[in-house]
Amino acid sequence: MSVELLRRLFTVDECYKMLEAGILTENERLEIIRGEIIRMSPISPPHAAGVSCLSELFILSLAKTVTVRVKNPVRLNNNSETLPDIALLQKLPSLYRTQHPQPENVFLLIEVSDTTVKYDQEVKIPLYAENNIVEVWLVNLTEECLEVYRQPTANGYENVQTFQRGETVTIQALPDVTFTVDEILGD
Picture 1 (cartoon, rainbow, N blue to C red):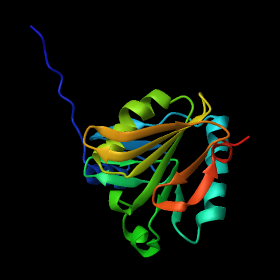
Picture 2: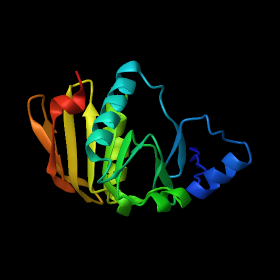
Picture 3: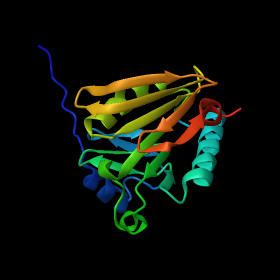
Picture 4: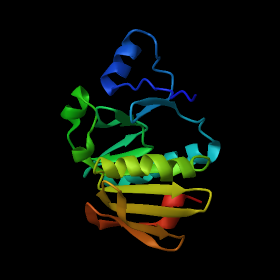
């Protein structure tokens, strides 16, 4: 006889109640993915350096145009809230004081990845597509490339491109802004 194990899934609001009750703590790096509470992996030095480089690049070049958030929540739906490495958002600072950004506020989400490339490609990026995040960049430190995901559908992104060093890339929502892949990957 086989036994089916049932998981207890949580809503984002329930997770915040657990935080208020002290069951979860603010110091834990957690994401809520399809109702599951996921502990994020430790941040490696290359990952931290990549996030720092990108945040500086985007803040210096785009701060007057978009809100740049680093490692802060984006609420995708009632069962998922992620902590992308970088989020480029509509400039609505007063809204973000009362609630986390939602898909309609997002121009671009960026995940910097070295040890979690497969997880980002197979779990997080499809989740972003399902929730209509219009553009996602995966800074793949292992392969030293930039993966760009556009045109979300319920089944994933229809347009996926890989950019190498020496190439340039634009943000779909900001077509006049161009970056080199070398700037994105850092030295």
